[in-house]
Amino acid sequence: MDCTLPPDVRKWKESMRRFVERELVPREHTLPPFANTLPEEVTAGIVAQLKSEGLWGLAVPREYGGAGLGLVALCALREALGHTTLWSLARLLGTEPPILLYDCNEDQKRRFLLPTLQGKRYGCFALTEPNAGSDAAALKMRAEPDGKDHFLLSGRKIFTSHADEADYALVFALTPPAGGAAREGITLFLVETDTPGLRILRQLDTMGGDRPSELLFEDCRVPAANIVGVPGDAFGLAQKWFACDRIALQPPIAIGAAARCLAMARAANAAPDAQIGQLALRVYVAREMLYHAAWKADQGLDVRHEASMVKATATTTGLEVVDQVLQWFGPAGYGRDLPFERYYRDLRRFTIAAGTYEIQQFIVARALLRGFSPLNCFAGAEAAAGGRQPGPAHT
Ligand SMILES: Cc1cc2nc3c(=O)[nH]c(=O)nc-3n(C[C@H](O)[C@H](O)[C@H](O)COP(=O)(O)OP(=O)(O)OC[C@H]3O[C@@H](n4cnc5c(N)ncnc54)[C@H](O)[C@@H]3O)c2cc1C
Image (cartoon, rainbow, N blue to C red; front, side, top):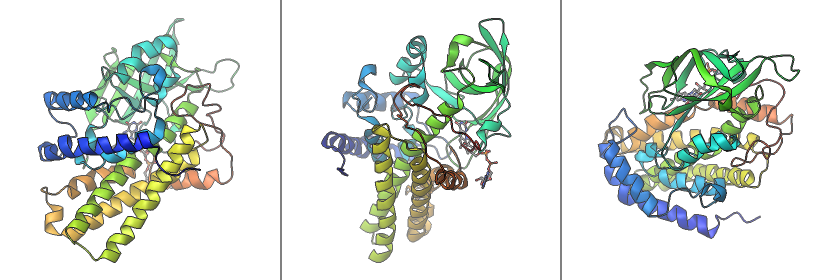
């Protein structure tokens, strides 16, 4: 097995690093402390520049107009992006793949996937509820048939990131038993955010730039044509999303951030070599785990087990490195002139959102007792065979 990054991926990663140094690092100080975006016209200019340098759509499959470089490439681009606190623009920079939209039918792909890949529409992911987060299968939101062609959604979702900016939401809800099933199943709906009956109750202020929303659905009427995949069988889709997310979203950012902070510590002689080396070893381990898992995912192999190990390792490593380097720099490290305090607040979220550190440990322990089936992050439901796992439903 060749454990080095393929030459084209390495080349794109270096290009992204140059882009980060030139376009993003100089703008870091303009990012408000409790926001994660810049003014729209500034972001539009950055996106246009990114596209002109060929850095858009590299991980998107060729059939959808991308370069088809896969999850390894996506991780490499995002690791490069982690070298700036403006990594928070990642979604707008086309580096957060709409994984579940690859499972859409042709009509849904036209309405949702393609405009999302082009950066014209944005979605949010609404799974967590007041009593269903770590145990996602405990969700209570209901979708009752309304005539032959519609469903009425009722219930609450919480902590939905970017709901205030999204054009549509991916909403998981319980539907009545279908096709001879004994129990109601979990179904995934694409819901336009301007649908009557859906509103944002409030946004939660957090220690970082995120302001996730609490959503209320009251008889929100959604066409059956907006169901993704098989009605009643969407828990496997949620698991697929989690597996890809736990590899490619937070870990590369955490590793990039840690690498930058360590480099700054080294350049400033902020600590003895042995202490810096000790943390560098941990970053190395996390990075190797990340690319190994991404490579396996690109082969269409099972990565649910690895996804949890990568998330647990990379996010805690990133947080510990940032915290330690902040400490080495003392009061200057605590201040806003340096990137550490912002990184610290951002990375603190990574051990909670998309499954807590404890839940990752739980999944790793459980996986020792079971085999998992193959998973391909950029393929539709048929290729990602057998998503659903029996037993406890912790995400
Ligand atoms: C900033 C932010 C953004 C988010 N964005 C989204 C989003 O866009 N969409 C979405 O659907 N959700 C989102 N979430 C929700 C997030 O994924 C959940 O909050 C997270 O998975 C934890 O689930 P919970 O809320 O049920 O926590 P709880 O399960 O109540 O966790 C509380 C504590 O109990 C521990 N715990 C729970 N079960 C066990 C167990 N079996 N063993 C050991 N310890 C356990 C947890 O580890 C944690 O420490 C977001 C959360 C945050 C903070």
